[in-house]
Length: 195
Image (tube, rainbow, N blue to C red; front, side, top):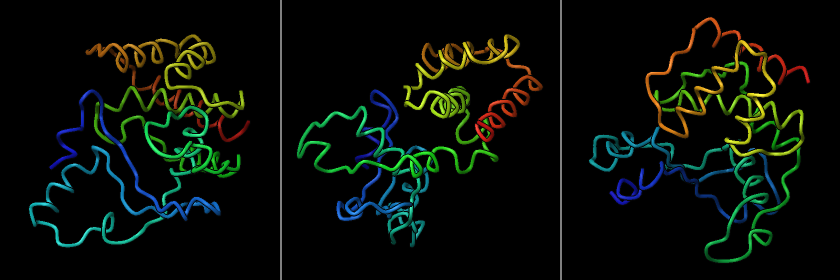
């Protein structure tokens, strides 16, 4: 299983495969033919070992709103390793599509979604979404963390600081008060929706 050889060396692998003709003219949400992230590792292992006969993530196209975000980020910060220049492949993504891509399911946003190792990342992502709404530019997760640290009330700053330490320095055992996490989550979501 080739993806297992690549995954986590040095970081977790996430990729999507899309037809180039689905980029021009631009479609939103964008059809996707294949997606891999570590959230799907067990699914693919089961499929490749014959335990799953059908899989929507490889048997049929599916619309993926996240492609708008990935394409927009590629246009802004991508590096072409091989092939045509980025500007010749990816169209300009309308702001409305990009915003929908990063904020459409914000009400259900949960710091504890996915694997527990994503907890700190999920905290930083929520602040990053708000930073885009206010600043009108895409910040890296690190820059977004610094921005959020300076934006939130002092009582929540330890949460952002801990999330930065956990995500970037791999510190463990950091404490978070559940009530503070809930309040911060509601604060950020409300501001994302109200700005």
